[in-house]
Length: 115
Length: 115
Image (cartoon, rainbow over all chains, first blue to last red; front, top):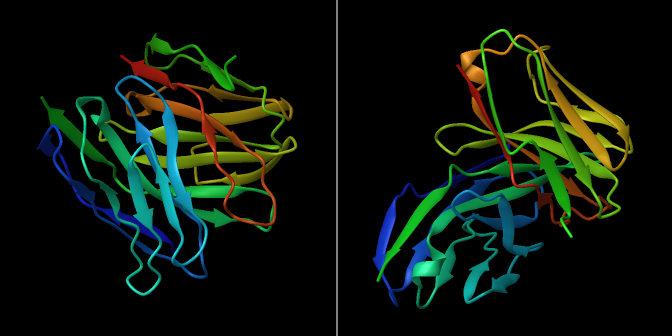
């Protein structure tokens, strides 16, 4: 079945450092790909998404490119801030004939940014 | 104005009790979900409803019974609670079409602790 694998955390960085969180997927067909973020004590928020190969999703300085050839969707940010500290989830969307979508999540990566 | 709201936010109860979690969305979406997040932050879908019809039941024990009185509400009732049910339960909604790129909006979560 479909699955998502992302790097284990925690990832600890200093402010203004470069961030990469790796995500690879296994899927039949061409799923949409997402990055969700969960700040402490809160629910999940969509950070960015990409719907087809070579699409680049971007938001709040974060970027990820849908790479079909490497089945990857790595999250990057050029300069992290303390406020970026959160758990980041990579996910793919599995459809059910237009009736519903099921999100399949990776295990989450905790990012801790130190001042 | 909260898009997806669930109550209660925290729930502490004894083993064997029956409890309910309520969820409401004001986004006009036709599809709602329940996801479970375990102690290691792993997220997995439990149920999905489309216009009050159950579409996904992801091998969840029969003690869990979702109910959707209308497409804006999806409640979760749990009978005979067990220690292993302790988790954070997230409600979500989306507007599903033929393209699998529809964002899911999540509630703040209900932290259930069974003692």
